[in-house]
Amino acid sequence: MPARVSMILTLLLAMALGIALTIWLYGTRQLVYEEVTAARRVAEQWLEALVANATRDGTAAIDTVLPQLVAVGRLRANSLNVYDASGALRYRSPESTWKAGRVAPRWFAALTDPRVPSLPFALADGRIELVPDTSRAVLDAWDQLRAALGWSVALLVLVWFGTHSALRRAFAPLTAIDAALRRGADGRFDQRLPRYRFGEIDRIAASYNRLAETLDESRVRNRQLEQDQAVAQTVQARLEEERRTMAGELHDELGQAITAVRAIAGAIRQRADDRPELAQSAEAILATTRQMQDGVDAILRRLRTPGGTACEHLERMVEDYCTQWAERHPDIALGCNAAAPGRVDDMLALAVLRLLQESLTNVARHAGARRVEVRLVVAAATLELSVRDDGRGLPDVSGSARYGLLGMEERVARHGGTLRFESMAGGGLSVCARLPLRAAVGANDATNA
Image (tube, rainbow, N blue to C red):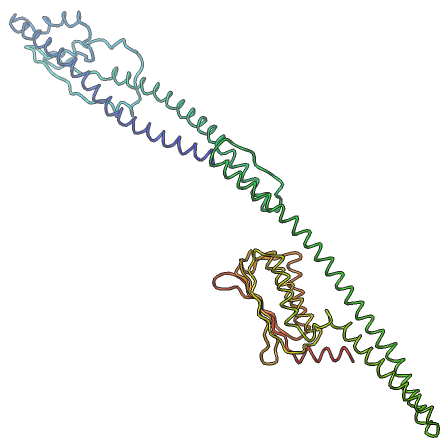
C-alpha cells in the first residue's frame, strides 16, 4: 500500500511538472522571439543608416559598407551576409563564440525556434541580408531545461522516498492490526496491540484488544463446557448402559427364578387337594411370587425409563430442560410450548430429549441468536420437535459440531423419522424432527420382549 500511494503521488507530481514544462516551452519560444526581434530592430536601424550613407556617396556601395561590416563583425542574435550583383557571397559575419561548437537537439529547436524571417537591404551593386540567429538563445533554453529536468528528477525521487517512508510509518500500525486479525481468524487471540499515538488507530487497537480478551475467555469457557458435556455424556451413557445391563440381568435371572418358583408352587397346589394346609401354603407362595414379579416389572420400567417418569410426562421433562437451559443462557430469550400424549415410549422420549439438548447446545455455541423457540406437538400419530432461532443460520461446521449433527440424524433414523434443517428467510435456523409414535412403540416392545 505505501508503495502504491507513493507511486500515485509521484505520478501526479510528474504530471504537474509535465504541464509546467509545456507552459515553459511556450514561454521560452516567446522569449526567444522577443530577444531576436529586439536585436533585429537595433541592427535594422543601423543597417538602414549605413546603406543610406553609402548611397549618398555615389561610390560602389559594397566597397563602402564592407569595411564597416567587417569591423563590426557580428550583430547580437543576428548574422550578416553580403552578396554582389551576381548573387555571389562577398562576406559572412563570423560565428558566435558563445557556447561555440554546441547546438540544441533538433526536436527541442523545433519546439522553441520562432522562425524569424531574414531581412534584405538593397545596395547599388548588391545587397545585405540580416539573418536572425536563434541558435544561441535556443541553446541557452536547452541548458536551462536540462538543469530543470535534473532537479525535477531529483525532486521526484525525493518525493517518492519521502512519501514512501512517511506512509510506511503511518501504515505500520495497520500492518500489525492486520496480522493480529489474521491470527484471530485462525483461532489464536493471544496477541495484543500496543498504543500507536494515533487517535483513531489507538481506538481500533483498544477495541480489538477487548474483543480478543472476550473471545479468549469465551474459548476457555467453551472448552470447559465441552469437556463438562463430554464427561456428562460419558457418565450418562455409562449409566444408561448399566441400567440396560441391570435390567437384562434382572429379567433373565430373577425373572426366570420367580417363574420357576411359581411353577413349583403351582404343581404343589395341584397335588395337595387332600391336604388343605399344603394347598394354602402353595397359594401363599403364588401370591408372594406375583408380588415379586410386579416389583421386578416396576424396577425394570424404572431402569429402562430415563428420569423415572419420562415415559409418562415427556412434556414436563422438555419444559424442565428448557427452564434449566434458559437459566444457563440468560442472554437468549427462550420460548417453550410442549404438548405430548399421556404416555410415550421410553426410547422415543430419550431420543426427543437428546435432540433437544443437541439443538439448544448448537444454538448457544454457534448461532449467535437472541431468541429461540422450542415446540413439541403430536399430529397424525407423529411426534414433532422443532427448535427455531434468529441467529446466523446453518454455518459450515466441523469437529464436534459436525459429529453432533450426524448423531442427531442417526438417532432420528433409528426411530424411522425425518430431520430437516432450514435457513429462515429473515435469518436464523429451524431444526425440525418428526418421529412416528407407532414405530417407536413397536421398537420398544421388541426391546422389552
